Amino acid sequence: MKILLGITGASGAIYAEKIMDYFAKSKEHELYLIFTKTALKVWEYEIGNFDGNDMPFQKYDIDDFFTPAASGSSDFDAMIVCPCSMGTMAKIANGIADNLIIRAADVMLKENKKLVIVPREMPYNLIHIENMKKLTEAGAKICPASPSFYQKPKTIDDLIVSVVQKVLNLVDIKINAINWNPTK
Image 1 (spheres, rainbow, N blue to C red):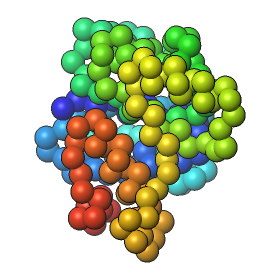
Image 2: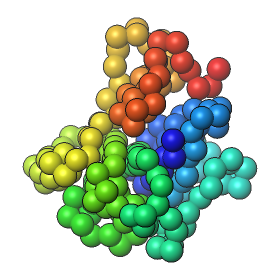
Image 3: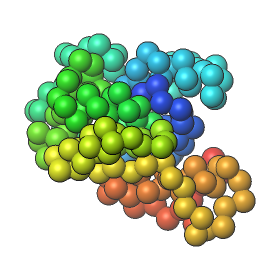
Image 4: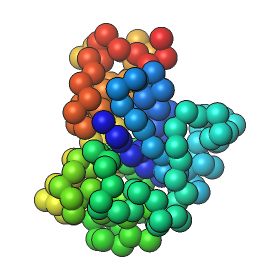
């Protein structure tokens, strides 16, 4: 399975990092990355120094519309936008494809492929909710970064993994969070 991961400047870079940890160990799935410029700054602030060159994934430039991710004829199976800023979500919901993440998300919707939006911001205002409604009606899945407590988490990492597990399940990668931790 080929998955695009769009990473925006919303807080919550740790969720994207955990998704990458899973794919770094997966032999059956491929991950491709698109970072906004602000995402790189937030990553460095929240996680630390960022050197994308040591990642085992192909990265597409946010302004490069000549990549396979920008075309409906590409063979990507799904896209995850995590974390997703409210600005990016609004642009996807309203078809304002002014960068590669938004264009790739638009392609997923028009080709009836899986698109999972992971907003991290809270609380939601009515505009956010209306944009989520538009995206849901267009076929996207909205998966707020709201961890579960069924597994009786003991660490922040346990909470993060519960969200990542749900996100991956939504793109048909079945993970059991009780038995899986990408850092172990």
